[in-house]
Image (tube, rainbow, N blue to C red; front, side, top):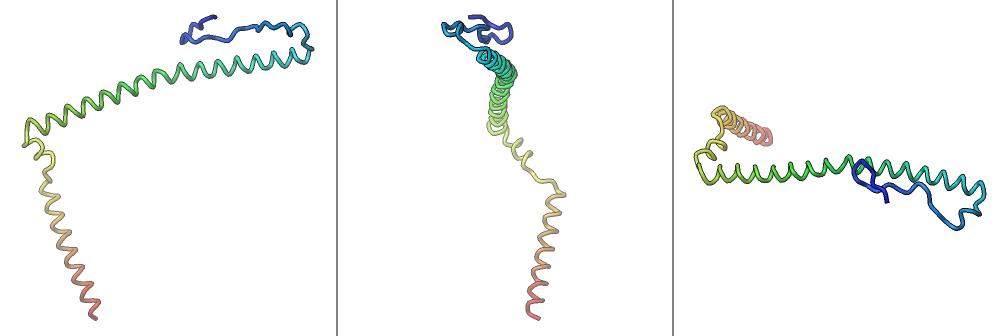
Length: 120
């Protein structure tokens, strides 16, 4: 068994020994060679795919682990250490409060106008 230098995956053997190999026709030899080449190409494609996807899977696992760790740390520091920090993060700006009050007044005026129009 040989080991490939890239990725440490086993490569297929170059020759298959069989007792029937001596009795193969020229067409069967040709078909066997074509099949061998197709298998070798397929093996190289799979090997490249595995070599490409393993680092991505490792990085995904590391990033997800770090994300969970950072999230837990930040939420812990917000909730446990400083109630003012949480209030500051969730506080609305004065502009948002003013605009919401304007929209509420406009909504009430439009509802009254619709009610008046229904009465007509």
